[in-house]
Amino acid sequence: MMIFKLREKFLLRVPHLLLLIIVGSLIFSGGESHNLMSPSKIRAYNQCEKNSNTNQQQTISDDYPKFHAFMYSVDAFIPVIDFHQQSYWLPNANIKRDLEIPLNYSNIICYKNACIGSLLRWYFWFHIVMGWVLTSLAVAGFTGLVRRLG
Image (tube, rainbow, N blue to C red; front, top):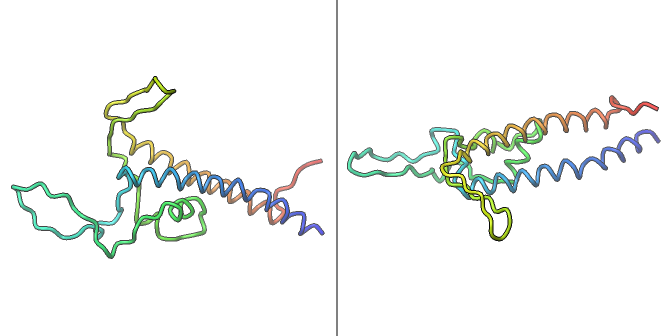
């Protein structure tokens, strides 16, 4: 009977974990659409000849793993799962862009040359820490290591 109560309490916590994973996937998807996610491996880029007269942007190789926001969020959030997204992609903290935050229909806050890549990197770290804490608490609660007093 006690096992069913533990599982029932664990299942009540699962929507909270899923909510954080979904929010993370939306944030990482937005970061990817604004080119804030960069490959973490040098082998990601195609070899191109260096020509001093042209300013060529490096392209990502076709055999490099594609970025998938939901899997990236799960990979970063749950410490025991490795989908190899977190090891191949990282938020680029060096990217700066103009940032506009709408307050209402007529007022907008504008930040020129804002470090939005750095904001995404900070969220990435927060996402990892919350994953470690909440996953550890969920496992501890499921196994009965954490109990309420009273």
